[in-house]
Length: 211
Length: 187
Image (tube, rainbow over all chains, first blue to last red; front, side, top):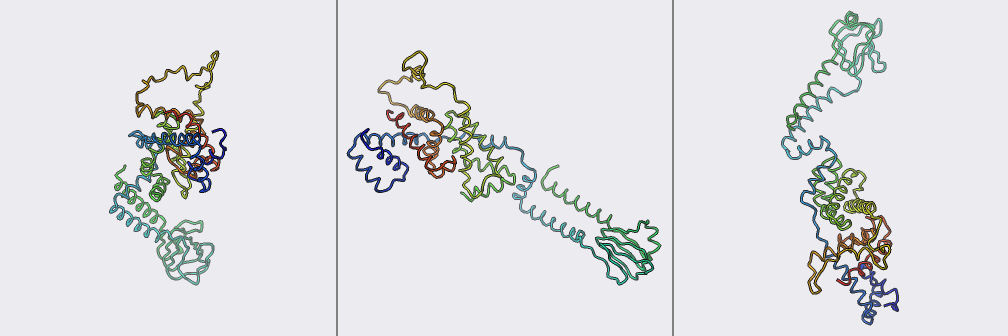
């Protein structure tokens, strides 16, 4: 064995790695036929591999997965809700429908572009409609997502959605300058928003059977 | 199967623990076996393989979903095993000579399991012998031998698991094989 070239052992390992070149394999085969020591060495290597492979059938304990899951950090609540949805498709469809419905209602209210009724006498400044001093605006005015300042007079009603009447004065003062009604929809909007949120939440809780 | 694992991992990333349970089911035997053969006792093996799965869960964001999940998982498990082996390493070695004696090692003080010469070595005893020989390998050889012959993984994957060049993996496997050959040839 000692007189055999080191390279033969190298080839044995190349062979066992499944990466031997054909010419190396030929050299190895020829050598093993003639050298009993190397043949034995090679057989011992193969035998020890077979022995090691023979013990490779161990299974994890029966409660393994359960134990892992018990020791994980707590699951986020929204996930269990999601999983619940995927198991109850009909109710999921119903709740998606109600979400869309609520969303369309909301978008109607919460579009945040400033808009105001067209009127040549109105002056617009930074999301504020101004009725200039000395002017009288004829017709109803609707201001959305912005404020209105009334320095002059309005011959009609003023409706402010999502904004307010600013002039540092009280409604009473403004009221004198406006012939029609003054309506601010902020409160109504807030109330509606609250109602929708409330309905949505109780639906969710009912669906998930929690709280 | 890769697609199955990928879809589960996406759910796990959203925090779904049931999906992680399916992953554990899929790999628990492989990971447990790896730890068992590295550490040599089932109690520690269970401890470490549990830990490996929990770490995988906690660090799931760091896993690159385009790579093989098992490689990443084996890597966590192998590193934990190697850490454990290093920590519990005794400050004496069985094959160190006992002081004041000549050529007498601690091995010779352990009563050999007495077998009648012609008695067949039972299958369980044989398994214990093989396991013990694996445990005698230094951990760097032990890891490659276990990954190669117990888990039956290709060299390239072992090199990824251990983060070593493939040449180093080969050298270690060769040395590990030679060491095992010397220990196991008389069985």
